[in-house]
Structures are given as structure tokens and as C-alpha cells.
Length: 291
Length: 265
Image 1 (cartoon, rainbow over the protein chains, first blue to last red):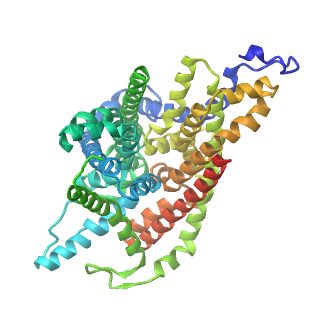
Image 2 (image 1 turned 90 degrees about the vertical axis):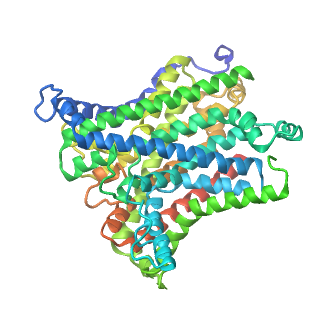
Image 3 (image 1 turned 180 degrees about the vertical axis):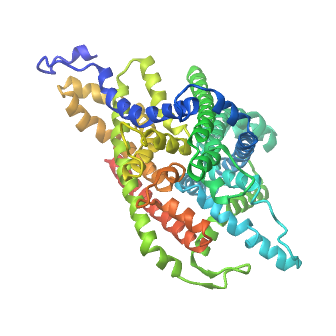
């Protein structure tokens, strides 16, 4: 194509295409990859400057770290499962049991993505906290001396907040996938006597599987990295890896330990991110093959 | 249409509306109510007041709002330039280097924000560049965290652009810079605006990296909200959260108006 552009005038020496990618890459290297590599150096060399795996061994074997890793994984997996379930049900109603204003509701949930995550954690203390809306109402109604509902300051509080915050990330790809399903396919199936549950199982779910996997792996990544919600709920025994990094670096000034934990956290996130990319690439490729 | 009977449909709508109200309506409603409440020792607040908004509009909180908006605009503008540049540069590359660089530009979105904050803290507290304790380090953190989203939005827009426009312009003799300025950028303008508004929203709500690196004189709204709620001033924190959410939404809605106008043109 470029050979045809006879009109493009003087034989000015053109820069090769690759060179144009260099400036943003350099910016990113200086501001992101260089700092990131220093985390690894601090984790492996510590303050003394000699290579040692002792910091790594110490931290990774400590109960504090193992507890944090355990909490991080349990919270991320449970929250993702919750997001998938809630997102699937809400998208199903919006897409297949349409009502006036369904699209507006879809867009409203979408704007939730733009709001800070800690908003939900703060709201939950007003609703489910020990002197919150729910507990006060129940205590008054049932004449209880103590707040009956006490899950907010456990990992369930964090999980529930994360489900609220991250469900829109599942609904976005799901609604897009649902809009590709032919309405006539569902109409034919139901006129042949298939029950709604069977239609969901045999038509909708298979079509939505790529979107569920893509949305779910994105959720997993975001929930592993979530910090604001855990910090705001502030439960003493719910410590995740990001919170542990913050505690070590900012409260205790123990940068080496913080860096070791950060290396593990970053590795975990990058692993989940490659999973997400693979899922998206796989389904994009197979869909392209079908069409 | 999945459910044919009227009763079934009404049942599905009611259930969905209930779930929606509990999961999304209630939290927003409660924050809004708390931001106006004088005292809340009972099921509902005993009286309503505007004092938390008055608090938010003076002193530290007003300063924090200003800091957040300045940081958001500066970081988003820088990310817009850098991300669009990267997306445009990658457009003409061969398949393999393009995919490799694409992954590199997306990586910052996958790294936890607290770790980005820690990395910047470690890197810029030692020579050759000392930035610890300056405003610049907050800007850099926000820029790094949002750059991937800007890049993603702009390259998605470029991918949807039919190649014919540029080819026609080229065959008519338009030089590369002219093509960029008069053909490509106007066509992807809606994506540029969407990218900017998303990054602005993300920057306004950023907490993880900021809390690691902010200097004393440069406190953003989320950090301010956290320290208020940590001290127990939860009603002031709610009012500030409302201000943060509403100002973010105003910018988003405003920019999407401009963007839909641009796409109509």
C-alpha cells in the first residue's frame, strides 16, 4: 500500500515504525519497570547489599505471611464466585426479561465501576456494622441486648463488599455476550417446550462461557489486588497481602519484608493476568474461527 | 424473552429489583443519608444537618478536593498523551513485536497499586533521582496506574477504525502528521475522551498507591476520607465521599456528552 503513495513528496528520511514506540516505552521503563525491579533487588539483597535468600525464606515461612496469603486467596475466590453468580442473574434479567429502563439500569451499574471501592466498605459499616441500620432495627424489633448480626468485621464483610464492587466487571462482558444471542433461538426453544432453566443451561450458559471466564479472571485479579475495602473495614484478623505490605512499609518501616511480600503479590497478580489474557485471546480466536 | 407468563416476569423483575436495591441502592442511600445526619444512634438519624458539607467545604477537606482534582487532571492528561502515543505507534508494527509491546503497556494495570506505591517509594528514595516527599511522586504513581487503561481505550478505538480512511487520505497526498491530525485523531476523539474520563475517575478514587507515598502537604480526597473515618468522624467522611462521587460523576457525564457530540460529527 505504501508504495502507491507516489504523491507523498520529498524523499525525507522516514523514521522506521519501531522508533515511534520508544518514547512511551522509555517513560514506562523509567517510572514503572525500573521501580518494580528495585523491589526484587531489595527483596533479594536487603539493606546490606549482599545476595541472600534468607529474607525471602524468613518472610515466606512466617505465620503472618501465610495467614495473609490464605486470606487473600479465600477472599478473592469467594468474591469472584459471588460476582459471577450475582452478575449472571442480574444480566440475565436485564437481557432476557427486558423491562422499560433495563438499559438504564445496566448503565447505572456500569457507572459503579468509576466510583471508589471504599465507598461500599464505608456504607456497609452504616448498614451491617454493630450499631448499623440492620442491627439497630433487629435489636429494637426483637428486644435483643446485643447486635445479632456480626459478620462485617470478618472476611465475610470484605467478601460481600468486593462482590458489590466487582459484579459490574462481570456484567459488562456478559451483557455484550447476551446481546449476540439470537432472540429467535430462545423463542424457538421455548415454543418447543423448553423450560427457562433448560434454555439457560443449553443455550445461554454455553454462549456466555467465554464472557464468564474473562470476567471471572478479571475479578480474581482485581480482588487479589484490592486494598481500599480491606483497609476501610479494618478487621483486625483479616489481613491480605496488600494490607500486609502497607503495614510493614508504612507502619513499621520494614522495607525489606514489604518488598518480599510485594514480590509474591506481584507474581501472583501477573500469573492471574496472564490467565486473563490467555482466556480472552483463546475465546477471541475461536470465535473468529467460527465466523 | 425468556419468561413468557406475566406472573413469572413480574416475579423475576421484583426479585431483580430487590437484589439491585439491596446491593446497589442501599449503600449509596446510606452514605447519602449519613452525610446529612446530625446523630445516628437509632434506626434512623435523629435529625438532619448540613454541617458535614460545611466542614467539607472549608479547611483541609477543601484543600484535599483541590489536590485530587489537580492530580486527576494532570495524571490523566499525561496518561492520555503517553497512552495515545503508544497506541498510535504500535498500530503499524509487525504482529509479533506489536503483541509483545501490547502486553508491556498493559502490565501496570495488573500490578497491585500498593506494590506500585512501594516500588516508587524504594526507587525514588535513593539516587540517582530523589522524589520521596514531593508532589511529583504522587503524580507519577497515578500516571503509572492509569496509563494502561488509557492505552487500552485508545487502541480499542484505533482497532475499530476502518483502514480505508487513512489509505484514502494517503493516496490523496496527505503527509503522516496531517493524516494524524485531520483524519485519525478526529475519528478516535470519542475514545480519547472516554479514556480521559475513565482515568480521571480512577485517579480520583485511587487509594492504595497514594497512601504509601503522599507527602504531608499533598493529601488526596481518598486519603483524607480514610483518616476521617479512622478517627471516627464517619459522617464527615460520608459527606466527603459524596462530594468525591458526585464530582467524579459530573466529570464523567460532562465528558460523555462532549464525546457523543464528537462522534455525531
